[in-house]
Image (tube, rainbow, N blue to C red; front, side):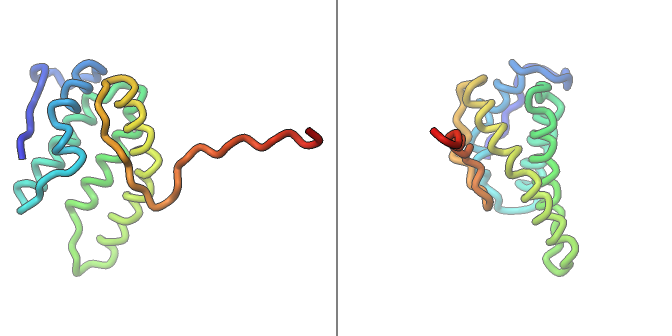
Length: 132
């Protein structure tokens, strides 16, 4: 797993630096290689760094994704409540993941998809007007 830091140490939100980080770390975001606790910690740190850089357009959504990653990293498989917190965070982050993937593709030119979700997030077709 290769994690790259771009743009210096300034942690303030920046679309340009967020896009550069996402582009440089796409594979670690989309399909990280997790062989041990160190790899998990690196992925959590990457998401936390991206949360600090996330522009306003996706800051809330990236925060939800980061919370889901943190909850998954903290799971104790022997603790049902721990597992439930991770499941709840994953559900809360589904719409956010779709929104971020669409924004990153449109704004950064980086494809993070397809985003797999439990609940369908396709936009429904508008209903035809009654009497038409």
